[in-house]
Length: 197
Image (tube, rainbow, N blue to C red; front, side):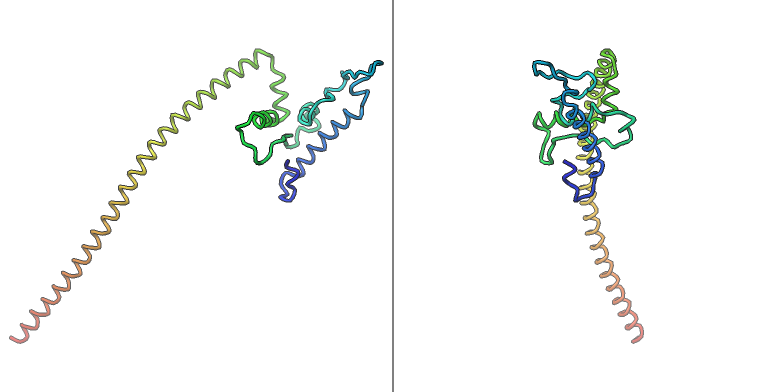
């Protein structure tokens, strides 16, 4: 998916590296032929216990099964997805594909190494904490919405008061200018009358 976007020059090399590693592992499994799957005298294929990769494995399966920290531990994780840019998470297939490829192989192996009790406890703790966090986020979101609504009303009131103040200020300046003009006219009238007397 990312490899097709080479014109952007983004993630192309890392994706090609992951594809090359995955393809190499797949080719290795396929090249073994009877060695990878084994061959009975009656012609039926049997799994080879030496290879963790099965004949029906997808590229995603091979990506995870062929991982070793020594060989690929420092490489960027590039999910082997069939997701398209138009996909949305309202369909089961897209959600499942995202889940299957989203976590790096190191984390998948870490979880795989847990015993059943440890995995069960981690699930319960994680699920409860996620639900509890979601509950608090909803509460805070509602509070923030109310606060925002109150703040917007307060802002509208301040804007109206500022407009009213500007109108009163302009009116005051006009009346002040008129008063000073009348005062000067009166002073000139008194001064002219005094000179005549």
